[in-house]
Amino acid sequence: MAVPTLSSESTATAWSGPSTLFAPSDASLHSCYSCSVPSLLREHIVPGLFTMDYLRKLAFGTKVETLTPGKCITVTSSSAKTKIFIGGVEITRPDLFNNGFLVIHGIQGYIAPLSPFSCDVERLNSLTFPFQPNQISPPLVQPAVMRLMMRDAILRLRNNGFSILALAMRVKYPELIALSNMTIFALDDFSIFSGSYSYISSVRFHIVPNQLLTIADLERLPVGCTLPTLESGQSLVVTTAAAAAAPMRINYVRIKLPDVMRNLKIAVHGIYLPFPRIYQSTTPAAGATQSTVENTQADSASASSDCAAKSEKDGSCAMVPVPPVKATLEVEDNHYGL
Image (cartoon, rainbow, N blue to C red; front, side, top):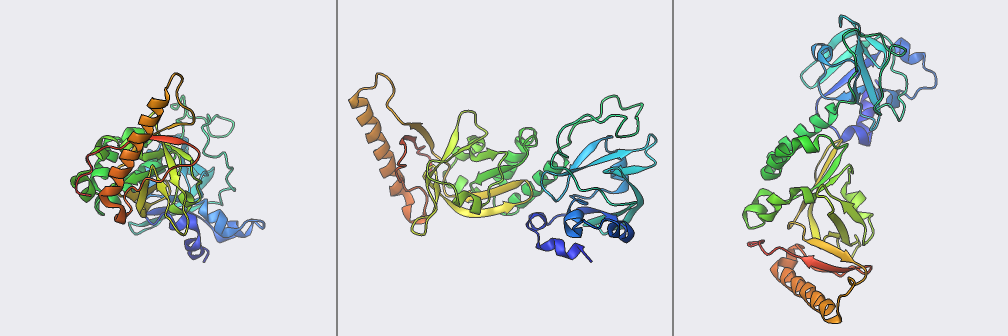
């Protein structure tokens, strides 16, 4: 009866793929007088299909993140793996239900409310879990959820006109899988083939690591706010804040398709052009002459003119000055056809 109420929760709606529910009995739930059943059940649901056979193959101490972000359950087992424990609670009715989209296991009790530190890396020992003679050093946190979210994102992007980005994510999989979450600014296949080839070699410059930013989050950012990228030493800058009169721009480029794809770990936004690189400097470099500064400003104005001449009506890259800084732009000139 409580499960349908979870569909109204933002954390649940962010993930619409296959899931596994570790279901406590009515009697055990009734014994927890202070528990909020919907909140408790969110900590009993994990993204992905974890059948009993699959759970037996997991290493002792594997942590799996639940639908409550930042909270993980721990999978352990008896020495012969005849019994599987989820958060210290035994699975007593394995594979109670499985329709290929939802797996349900009945468990002996309920998993105690999880700590905010439940996903932290920590060594398991014989004081908290049964001693495992063949398990000398229990494994650390396993990014099982991120792997599932990566597969989900790659499939959805490939089916929605972003196959080049999907391929790039497969190539950079070992690096991306280590992140806790990410925000990606994407160019669709048509735009890339129309001339924005530079995006292919600068995908890492378009990925914000360890931050899940929806369009609502981005529109709250002030002018001059910087976002780190996977490219070392390179950041993105909010050059125009969101307002009724003007949409927000990052590195002078307007977002074309907000929230193209979003799941529990990855948010993707479509953009008109690859981001130009902005080199911020609040004061002229030591030894720089007035002539050098003027030339730099002239070059920036020239880049502004060229960019605006391309396609301002589609919101591609109108150059709006950033009040706090003097920005020197390096706008690549291979965006033909846009």
